[in-house]
Amino acid sequence: MFRSIRWRIAVPYVALILVTMLGLALYISGHFRKARLEDLEAQLLTDARLLADSARPLLVAGQEDEALDALARHWAGLVEARMTIIGVDGTVLGESHEDRTEMDNHLLRPEVQQALAAGQGSSIRFSRTVGYQMMYAALPVTSDGEVVGIVRVALPLREIEASVSQARQVVLTAALITALLAVLLALLIAERSARPIRRLTEVAERMADGDLGARLLPTSRDETRQLTLAFNYMANQLDEKMTNLAEEQSRLTAVLEYMADGVLITDAAGQVQLINPAAAQLLGTTREAALGRSFVQVVRDHRLVEVWEGCRARSEEHITAVELERLRLFLRVIVTPLQDPGRQDWLVILQDLTEIRRLDTMRRDFVSNISHELRTPLASLKALVDTLRDGALDDPLAAQRFLDRIETEVDALTQMVQELLELSRIESRQVPLRLVPTGVTEVVTPPVERLQPQAERAGLSLAVDLPPDLPRVLADAERGQQVVTNLVHNAIKFTQPGGQVTVRAYVGGHGSQSAATEVGRPEVVIEVADTGVGIPIDDLPRIFERFYKADRARSGGGTGLGLAIAKHIVQGHGGRIWADSVEGRGSTFYFSLVAVR
Ligand code: ADP
Image 1 (cartoon, rainbow, N blue to C red):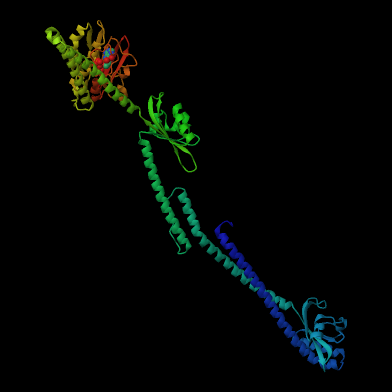
Image 2 (tube, rainbow, N blue to C red; image 1 turned 60 degrees about the horizontal axis):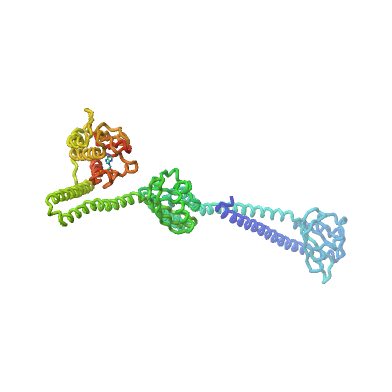
């Protein structure tokens, strides 16, 4: 209870008021009593003086005691007080209320002693004679300067005590009522003072629960108004900062979500605290599986762990390139310490350079291939020209032979340049494809017919197997024929005499990589199978690259560009191209075209 500000304000107030009122009541009643006693004393002394005056002649004359007794009683009746006349020796000579003969010597009574010593005396005492508190006032009776007796007037204090206690009660009641009112007032003031603080607490709690729009209306013009205004200002600032933070966080989340680089944050213990989708994809895991697990478990690659450990050991940024064989990835890894106050986190950025490296390798291969391809015909041209110059010109037959060979070389070079140009035009989409619904026969038959004589010359049988109900495909017939020509031409080139080349077509779902159902689009697969030399398994993934020749010795005059061109044409049609082969047993090339229903 006393923890609440209301009570902390009210209780001291109430205590102060109660103590003050009680003190005041006691003081007033004490003062009142004292004044009453003084009044009474004065009154008793006045009465004593009257009695002394009346008693003097009797005392001087040595009157009989009866007369003094009667005098005492007479005066007692007049002033309504107890009257006593005492001789100089202390003997009671007259008494209004008691039997004087039974009363003891009064010389040693304090008021009597005082009267004899100081001329008047008074005392408050319990009277054993009457049995209650009395006030006594005594005066010496003098005659010619000589004390002849002492008169004493007494009144019980009962009345005074009663009136004092009544007065005390009144004061106490008044004090209590005042105190009660003061308590109520104190509680009211305390409640009013505590109310704004309570409301502030409520609003602060609402804000803590997430309601950042909660505000207070200032209701007074005092300090609480300033507190309320300051609180509202603080709430506005907080709201603004939180909004900015939330905006920033959502931007950051979006950046992390869509950025191509993988981002991971680990804590000092090495547990993954954050992982973005790119990092999860690169490492072949998921956000849910990675969060809270150790970095080592998530990356599962000792070189990545080494880079990370190295950065942790030196506490400085570390950049390195790492090849992850397990995932066939080439990564640039950047590990940076994050200087968050009070904790040590590590930021790991994974940049996938696999594609860039592949393109770079391809570019380098391309340059070296093209130089290589050009070197042989150019060297042979140079040799032929030198031979002619060195005298062969004089031999017309030899000259003719050399010229023929020069022509062949130049034709080969021209063809290569043409194919390169064509490839680059197809790659850069400068060759517009007119994709229209076309019969598969239109794509397959003309090239097969054209190559039939060549197959026969090579001692091969070339067959076509087309089901009659094939759907039409979306194709540029001329370009489609170019692909078939390339594939059949290769099949003839790489198959020994007596072999078999077969061209088939069917609706998707056949072949090693067919994924017609995967893309959910019907397609027609055209297949060129031979029983030739086949392609080594290691070369198979690369045969569609420019200039790539699996077996340079056997590829003869080929440029190595045919399959690259075929691949680009097929891709331009929205289809795929792939190959299967068993070395020594033959190869099968497939390409797909989108079917039209
Ligand atoms: P090329 O002009 O040399 O034939 P291609 O791009 O058409 O160039 O073929 C690339 C390489 O793929 C060839 O050099 C050969 O090694 C291999 N290849 C293509 N088709 C076949 C096939 N039917 N049988 C065996 N190897 C093939």
